Length: 76
Image 1 (cartoon, rainbow, N blue to C red):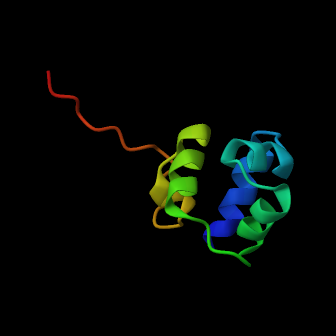
Image 2 (cartoon, rainbow, N blue to C red):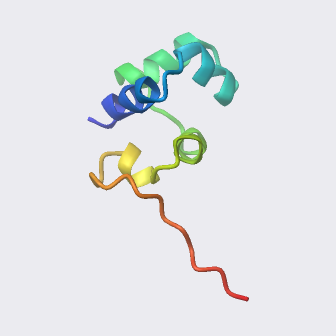
Image 3 (cartoon, rainbow, N blue to C red):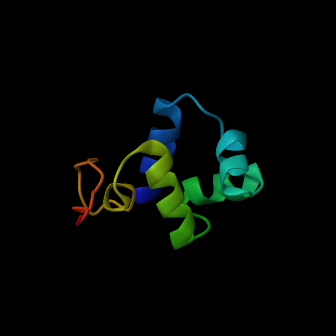
């Protein structure tokens, strides 16, 4: 399930639940519930975490195993 990816990404970056809670402006217990799948994570938080970890939201959500973030082609 995708919430395991949340934990794996956090541990790979060597940050605590408290650190990520601060990033998301929520208590570490709330973030811990996201990781354990007890509480549904809001879309805005998935987007913020994807930017923080430099991965795609699809990767966090378990829709792909490719962590490469999506970058739109910028028109000039």
